[in-house]
Image (cartoon, rainbow, N blue to C red; front, side, top):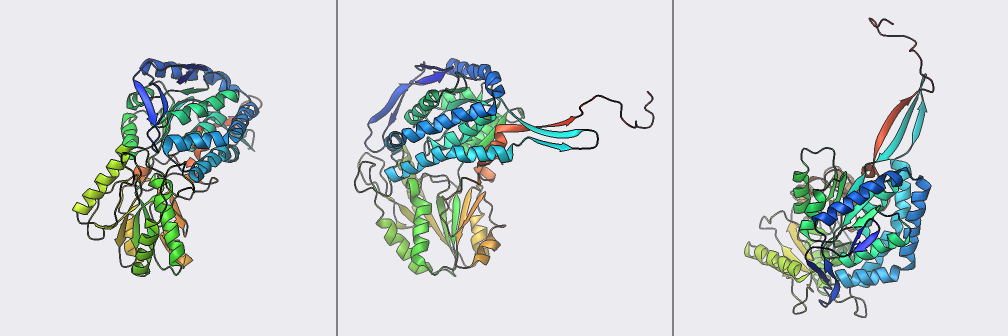
Length: 483
């Protein structure tokens, strides 16, 4: 279903279905939104913008709080739906729901800190600062966090006074519809949030519509295509979060078991389908390489993989689809043919379903392509010194997340200004990020509009004013100015 100007309606385009990757059962089915419906959604958002943006901040905040309360009251239902549609295991889905609910706290804090109203008294006038919403914001959501990541755009955009047209991933339409229904139940006025379901054609129609900004989370290829499309159009705000080919350096460590656990969490949490997952493990000669690799392979091979209905709970679920599973297996074959050594090969675990075991490949003797393998595939490279590790870590066009494990805090202090990434963690998994911090990267990982806490920055623009209570002649005029 599409949600346009406060009304639910069927799509007029092609048939669309989402299948549970755990058993290929149908989770959602309907039709896509065609260009006419997309334009109607944008028109509804434009019409609603005037009243929504002029509504008192406290009234907008009250609606956002009711939305949060809706999520809190139905969190078990949302968690189960995320598990069904994405394959996430329950503990992972529960974590996404908690992050979605908790977003409001950080959204409020960020709005107050990042978009303040200030007045500074000067000689004869006051300098004033306010922030104003852009208008209609298109939000493109990903499948790996179908509730949390779109909400990370929608909530700050709405709080600032923008209206939104939300285009979710075609692989997670059920979660998107469920989320929008909670906004409706919270009392959001008609047209303020609109939902258009569909595949690439729907996204193209929305990007081509009369919008004021586009907030995107997804693949680097799609993000770069959007960047090219909006070249020469500075009036359109474009915020991109596009994943990464993230390095994790293991240097001078004594607790091998702790380092292995953090590595496995970095590489394989969410079945490797987080944009901050470690993709490249870099081991220096100062680390206990042989013992570390031996323990890494042993523990990775024992990770429990299964469905969200399995008991006890597994650590990993399936990939989002068989297509993505085949893409990852093909990437492994390519690397092995190029000379990589399979320390622990990826394997299909269930016939006809996208359950994949973790894979670890030693690529020390080859130059693998600089690509984001979106799944549980970790490459390993051995180097001599820490400087070599930094050079290897930076040998990428991406720049989202990076990490270093070491017993010496000075190593982190040395790496921090030298690693090119928007997130650089020390002795913590690369997938860890604080809600009070910005989230985003550089290079092909983003375009310098970090999300997370800094989403407030792209949700409103500053308006500076010089204000005098009374119009009067200046105390002095410049030379040659005769009154």
